[in-house]
Amino acid sequence: MNQLLIFDLDDTLFETKSISKTSVKPIFDQFERLLINSYGKEMTENIVSELWKFPFDFVAQKYLFDNTLNSEFARLVNQYEYQLNIKTFEDFGIVQNLRQEKILVTTGFLKLQNAKIRDLGIEKDFAEIYIDDLLDPKRIHKQGIFKNILLKKNINPNLIYVIGDNPNSELKAGFELNLNTVQVSKFGQEKSEYAHYCITGFDELKTILKQKACIQHSL
Ligand SMILES: [Mg+2]
Image (cartoon, rainbow, N blue to C red):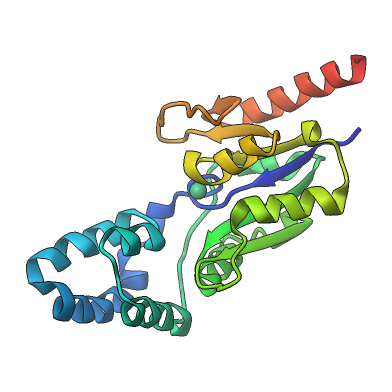
């Protein structure tokens, strides 16, 4: 039976922080002006620094952004022409050489996520690509996307591997659906309770897949 690999993008296949601040700074400069009107200078400074570090929806919820702020940020993000100049992690070649079918599932703003994929030049490495768009009113999140993949492929969940860095996103979603979860800990993150495996490099992923394939074959 063939294994199926579902990959996350940010901090799994490339370092999100490697997107240089200058390449998206015009968006933040314009948004900062709007934030100052609502939150004042001091709090805006905190908010902007968190926006660099955390996903937009997390920060928006924490500071209770109103609809105008959310839609203005979305407008800025979706209008901008991105030149990101980013590269995959050095060992991505191991992923490219894996013979298993690979699917990419990533959360974020549609245009920005597409720009990352285009800039990394990885479209051809995945049989299917899904973007969990933060602005989609009918958003089904990663778990909904995984469920659809399960239905479509009609394969044993035991053969599916979800590979990503975020315990509260793909790892939790995959764990709850009884899929194998592999946490990518490129920066020494602690192993999550939702991770069956924790790896620092893709050579380890290759080993896990091989071992599991042997066990499944002998059953
Ligand atoms: Mg990630």
